[in-house]
Length: 547
Image 1: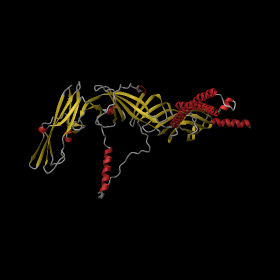
Image 2 (image 1 turned 90 degrees about the horizontal axis):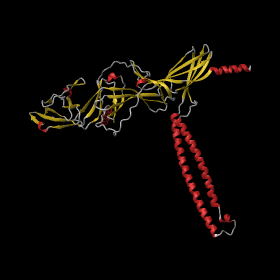
Image 3 (image 1 turned 120 degrees about the vertical axis):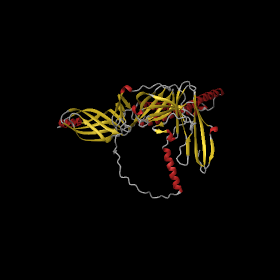
Image 4 (image 1 turned 90 degrees about the vertical axis):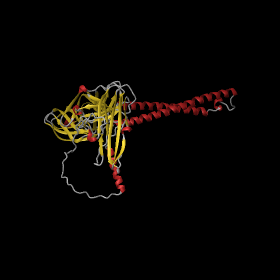
């Protein structure tokens, strides 16, 4: 009977197994990630119960998929966080704990020394000449002097020792407090609760079963980022495509096969549809002055939110030697492209801690052909900007993201690369160059104001001077404008003294209809060019214009 019970107990323990679900593969999305775990275990014939540990506690149960080999059939499963998992201390946490233990031992020694020193001071102070001489008659003068000298010397020594020990004790106590605070911070960052999956299954025969689990977690994500290095205005742009990623899934990702995807898993998303649009007259609304003022302020604030502000002057960082180039994973990254997304599979095992700290991964490096021009709008800004224009950005097969720009070894600033734009080029401002000077001034001798019957005619003439102070030829773009009438009683005419524009259309639109003048030319070294803008405006004399 006892043997039978032992056999049944052994069989029950054999059918209940705890296995570790090793994380093998991760597909990271902009928001979220798909984790794949795998493990193997022996199954006995009949009913088996398996506990798989080491999973993320942030599992989306609707996305959980379980695959098994060996013909086993899953009868039921349940998931729960594992709060009792035995997690080893991280090296940083272990170092802090060891330091605290050592400091506490040293503090205990100091406190013991201080206590002994305090007892010696008490013993010294309790001594009397009677005790020292051994009689009630007192002691001779010479012996008294020697006793006082000894008392003074020993008392000074003990008090000095007490002060030193007290200072060391305070210093050591403060160090323990700082180490303990840092240990609490590390423990908070590294505190992880893994997930535990319980599976009941039926096996037709004893077999070695391979288990594969995959699920989605929202506690991870990545963003694209770029480093743009430009050595000089006659060299192509070196573009390093990077990924900034982080995860707080509750487990560390150790040496996993990592794939970055631009896909966004659907969370109940449906395609939009249109309903009938009924049009009717709007009822007039009488609003108080205060309400109207609030409405105007709200509209202005909303409009301001949509304005993209471009810095007038680019402030360069202190001139430093360019940082060494970081090795990239070009030879280990495979780019996939389908109808919905881009993916970047890294063929090297990759590790990402689960502490939420941002990790940076270099994906690809490529050189982009670009055109460099010196661009200026002197009516608004008396500076010239060096612009890099990247042609056909849609052919680069890249994702939109922020980029840091380095020009001639100096950090210029940060910009946004929009590869989803329909524009044929991407223009980047690399900074201003004082060696290319521009000036716009009004020519008084060719400007006038006349009365013509019931109308006023005003003539405005401006001269733009552009000088190339560099020792090499440069391509330049100069823009100016003249007013465009939106009223039949206002007549604007561009006069013949105006320097003919070299560009007639921009982005498929006529510049004349927009009142724009654009000159694109190449200036030789030390060459100076002048452009004239002259136009007349006629309007009724009983009206005023903001000219």
